[in-house]
Length: 200
Image (cartoon, rainbow, N blue to C red; front, side, top):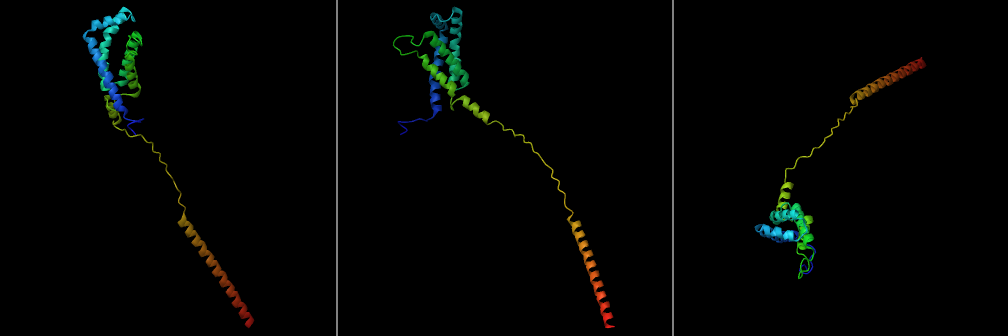
């Protein structure tokens, strides 16, 4: 059933294909424009979207930006910055040429590239990229031990004088036994005296 219905797959492969396709086209376009930069500057001026000075600056800088960011986009390096820059360039092209620049095509092809760049801007470059490699190195960094505050409490217990109490109890018992023996002896002596008187 996975051949007909598939809600989950490998997004990193899809992101890699997007980067390779859009990045290769961007890099190739930048090289072609930089090889004949005067012709590209004249094309930018012909749109009459910018002023003459702004058109010259934009036409001169754009090919080199496409080369740099196109190469970074293919490698998946600095993906958020690269995707945002290429998306901005695509948005400027769409604004200058319009959504329907010529007849025979449904819409401006730069809209497709704008969607690709926005996809990687929010989704990232994927696992197969230099950004993912740098993220792994950051995660594998040295783990510093956490500082733990150890609270020690000193418990002082007073030992009961059990030995002294035992000795005092024994002494009290000895005194009581002596007094009882003395009382018994006195009672016995009195009895003997009474018996002698009766015999007489």
